[in-house]
Length: 240
Image 1 (tube, rainbow, N blue to C red):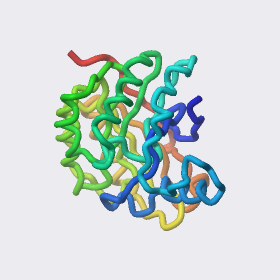
Image 2 (cartoon, rainbow, N blue to C red; image 1 turned 60 degrees about the vertical axis):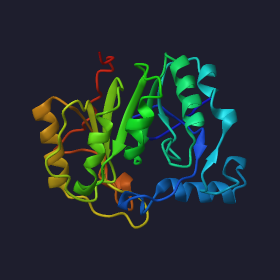
Image 3 (cartoon, rainbow, N blue to C red; image 1 turned 90 degrees about the horizontal axis):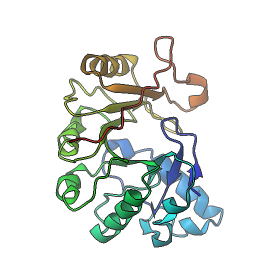
């Protein structure tokens, strides 16, 4: 069974890959790296390699056994498009998602440059959502890579938001998730950065989801913005 999660914008996580390497400033205080080391110290066999990238072939076909439909965040503990994940493995994960049409799979990457070429070799059934991380205005170029992917839903994870993203081109982007960094060493997020993104989403009719203010104690800061929660989801209609 997939793992139940506290991540607000999904129902469960599935990790056919674990471990990763840092690639941009958003990775500086990676929660997955902290968690992997903790699980390794606890003797969890999935994390015998700590946070070294590890392929779990025996997990690839797990979705076939999940009876109840759910939203599934793919590789919350890694990045499916990491350069050390071979195309053969990515294709196997996609085939598994293709076959499990009752679920929605949310795939997120920071390795956006790998997306356009690989996308042509993958089967993008309507239940596969594709997203890229954008932590500040230095990484908005990832959005252009995402636009070349024929996913039914394209989304941005603007988390951790560590600086203004400026004016976003939200053309053919269906969903934007925004959140502040949390945990040890968490960097501050300014409310003006969040409001600017929310207002841009409103202007383009793009679904907006505010995940958290974050901070060292994120339970204290909560997730309300201007007196309300923002839990918008995209319409998962296939593109033609």
